[in-house]
Amino acid sequence: MRVDILTGSRAWAGDRAVVRKLLEGCDMLIVGDCKTGGDQVALEEALKADIIVKQFFAADFGSWPSCGPKRNSGMVKFGVECREFAQVVGHALWWPVAGNRGTTDCWRKMKLAGIEIVAGAEGPPT
Image 1: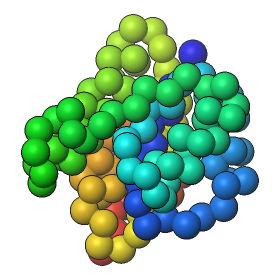
Image 2: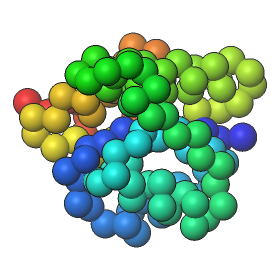
Image 3: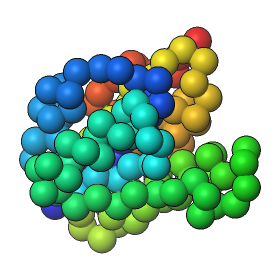
Image 4: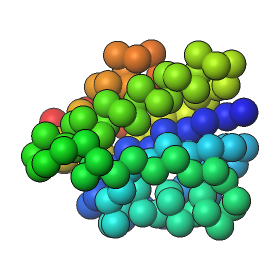
């Protein structure tokens, strides 16, 4: 089973065809709850492709502004747990937009967890 994690950015306005291509072979998508940008595009494309979606809602992790980083930690932890139970976290997808702290936070947590990032930039935006 291949599990992909997607993180932001809420301001990302990229090509849906790229998302569809990256999701080929994905069995489960771990994604946040932003109604715009990368989260929303990936959510819509995953549902169209009958991919299982595990969505993490920031509100479930407390009040703003600390709920976003806590949600990111929860997404990464779930990805690591999938890997520990003989499932593969195959991709970590991210689309940073300069100045987006949430996407950068999740990127750092994925790198620390040893999750390979296969789409997006090589490092956090400056």
